[in-house]
Image (cartoon, rainbow, N blue to C red):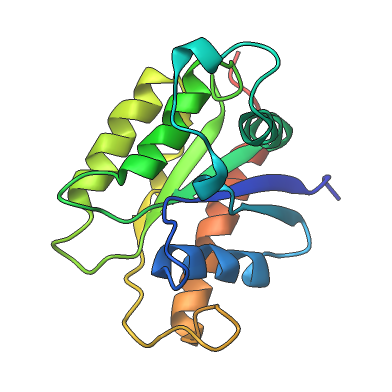
Length: 184
């Protein structure tokens, strides 16, 4: 059996009852034994990006974020759309990754949980930023799984079994990508 793969799950929302965070909590719950998940909930703790602070020693929340990215085999983002774009706090997180090399060639994907007709602006902006960072976008794992209002249980995870199956499929897609032999 192959070693488990590690997927860092990064929410782009600071909201306590965020459907994006609920989706990633669900990913933790549905991940198979050979997919380790690491849920990053430190978005609100990051200081405002300032290039003058992007030196050693890094602010502790930035150092922790970069270390978790470096330790992961892939990163799965799930972010809301505010005013047609990524939330400023999430863009701030991404800005903090520019100065480190942890995102370069890192396999990444994103999950959109917004209903059809919403979330496209955030996804497009995320694609631009991740392209600038030199990541390896796992296109088949960049999906929309609309999470209906009221579909989150008291434990903070999605309750719909079909939705949960779709999320498990997404994790398997990431895992399969990571297990492909490297191209020479």
